[in-house]
Image 1: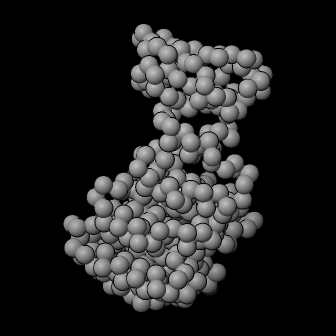
Image 2 (image 1 turned 30 degrees about the vertical axis):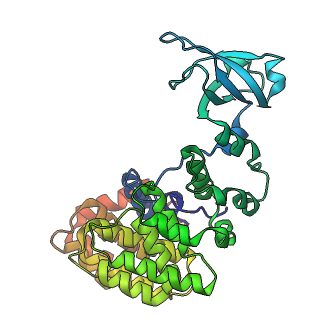
Image 3 (image 1 turned 45 degrees about the vertical axis):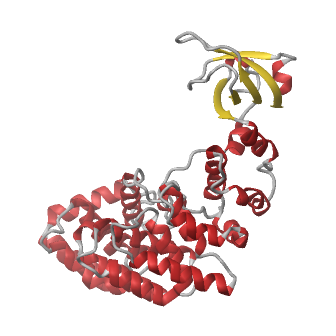
Length: 405
């Protein structure tokens, strides 16, 4: 399955399907617990966690009928709107020569306004049995949609069409072009990164009028440039954003950090680690963004050695509010060298939260070292009821029965 690009999304999808390398019921459960935590934060401005709505092309692909229509009359309350059909794009055979429709709209539309209407339903459904969705358009946005390539077109080729429309003056076009990149596999976005307007991306990142959730994408996109001059300029630009006062710029900050890691490698990780992961005074939001960026790099980056990423994530264990997520990451990354540090958290003051203890036990059950078995034996003596309760929860949430890994 193709990896999906965060928000814009990327990490939301990845965090829901952690491909844990060792099929242990404990590690599956720990991953599931972390996925729930990620979803709890999905309503924030985090570009890696934004849930993307369908693109216009996806709506077209799913619909039995697609048409350009004009509103003919303002309906009374709870009454369907009468629409004149100007152009049938999909499903002309369903309408059998009709030149108008009456459908219920979930949006206000004045007479004379243009709509793209999408009707979905079974193959045998009649027009009045379809579920209808409408999007307001004008001549410019309709032309953009009408020329948009089919989903059957290779992804990289499709993205070449949408790249010039990012931050288009028509809001619908700008949003849809962004969504196309958000839904695309990461490797395909990387293939066309040099088509993206790097100078304009930098401008958009500091433009207060640009929609905040898009800025994470733009920050990360800067990290994909391949021209040496662009990479140098992008690296310094992102570094300055990172060093800026905290109240000056934080929209899409995790994408900015992710792009910087792609460009700066180990030196970039050292800055991110020093300012956020290893800094006990760093703001919670910044730490969360930094963790997301490091996870992203672990999956998509190539230059920073794994042990450097592991060490950076270990620093987060010093903060109880992030400990369960960090432990889960370290287990996924097979950082068994953190065994002693993680095991000690079980009895540390402030770390008695159920999520942390589940993550600790899950880590110990997944760890292949004999020391992990001894540690569990010890913890069962220290807290027999607590450990038993955690193991019951982990076994219930497992897709692999204990002993059958």
